[in-house]
Image 1 (cartoon, rainbow, N blue to C red):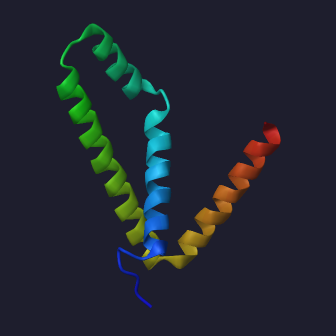
Image 2: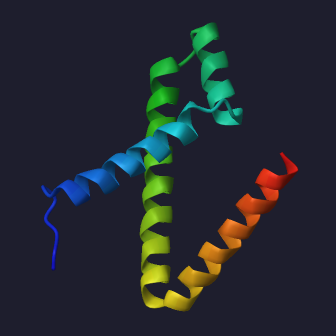
Length: 96
């Protein structure tokens, strides 16, 4: 069964991806601190915001497409990464 871009499942996946991307971008890291500093100084704000947004989009797309390709060809790797991620979260949660 193939899914078109208009099916509810495709929208759900899209929404999950956008939410994850927003969560990564909203967190104040070194890039966002730099953008905020330049904004407060009013120096090259538009160019910096545009560059950072495009760089983030390219890097996120490359990561998603690369992992989708790698995991699609190696289902064992997908299972190992899923178990490793679950173990990491369990240990991280236990420590918290």
